[in-house]
Length: 100
Image (cartoon, rainbow, N blue to C red):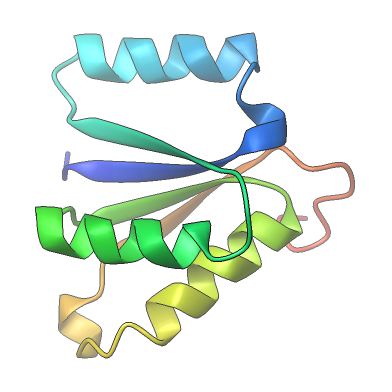
């Protein structure tokens, strides 16, 4: 599996099932960097960091707002389509309209 960065909404940082999944992925040998959002602009900053680190997948973990911020940051990253990291979603929001 490609190395990845999870951009996690701070409200979900204590989710025990998610913590167990991250631990399991790492124990299976997957490189998975986790960054927790705290304020506006964090998702964009983390997407840029993932690019610098050469990570090939971004996992947006949170609700529709987290997904929107990460997707927008990827859209404005200035990369050619073939250079864009793939985007995955872990729906942890209240309504998860987009995920549904």
